[in-house]
Image (cartoon, rainbow, N blue to C red; front, side, top):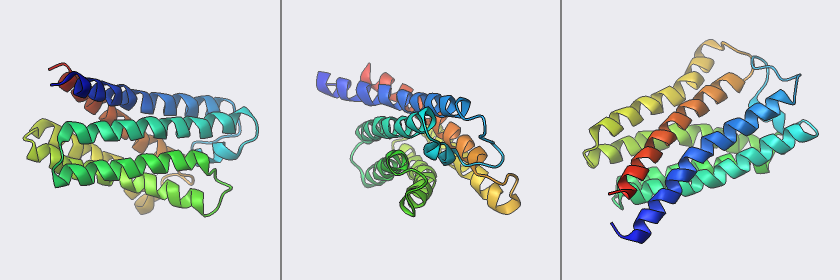
Length: 199
């Protein structure tokens, strides 16, 4: 592998790890600064309109995470190749990261833009993983294909369950669970990128 290609896989790999780390650190710091926040009754996006440090942490954390995630998505495309399925999967992942950035750029009080980009993120994320399941399968990376498929369903499950049972009045719990699932997937894929860059 050429030196340039190695570098351009390592950078997205680092970004793929930093994306969830930055996002969750900023989200939990924002929650810590907002004692009125309730996991059961609120949405995470409610933090984005709380005055002071809370909104600064939450909104800027998502913006930075989305930008890092964009670089990671480009790395996923480079790693899987230029076939049609990989292109589509990486493109949908890029759209998810753009939506994540937009959640921070357009807080909850910017209607209806915030609602639309929030829905887009949580829809595009599992869809991208479903498509990338096919890309991994076509590359004969069966274990990664199975893992990605399981993660895709796990990311969607909290939302399906919420609409079926309504186990909480707010959406913070399904947002956090879906995000955590995506974080695990991103870290595992980033590890694969690091391995590919070392060959």
